[in-house]
Image (tube, rainbow, N blue to C red; front, side, top):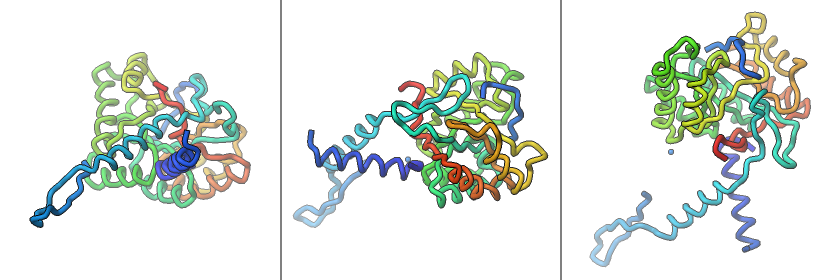
Length: 281
């Protein structure tokens, strides 16, 4: 499973089969910074735009079928680990990348795409205020990656008023929707620090709160390719359902291929966040 493309492939297979059969605890841990019309010519040769009702109907059926696909995983509300629903594979981890799109997010997305590795890119609003960064974010989204909300300026929410918190959160939701056509489904507070207000606002916006199980690339000791690649795969904190925190950083980008390969060699599947149960499901 992988991003929107992998996700849509699953849905296409689902529809084909149907037709054939007919019937982290919150903590203070530091966190580094899409009318279709058809033109036909009438007898006089004039082009006339008409709506193809059959195609629209088929599209609507596709969307309805997609909406009916049940989630395979859910978030543990206390540890933010990934929990299987039913008989889903329990040996999974979730990749998340914060502070995008700063320096290497697009490179990281391309690497993950080549590896068929899904992930959530949590964005900061101040990184998507130029045309170049908006284009980068749209490209990441169109590669099939889910986009999450990591606030506008990466401020500690506990130091802000409710109105300031509202601006921090809604700015990103509105901007992401403007760029991608979809609002974020997950919210990650800077430093893992939420407030009563941010929890309620995220809930009102239909977003799941998400922190992490472990992350190291913001610590000086692990700011090299080899160090971060080793610890992300060999830490004692790696276990079924782990929620892995990484950042848009040079050393993490360089180590990403090795991290993904290492996790898979240990038998872990990378869970597609599109299959994680949403807040209102």
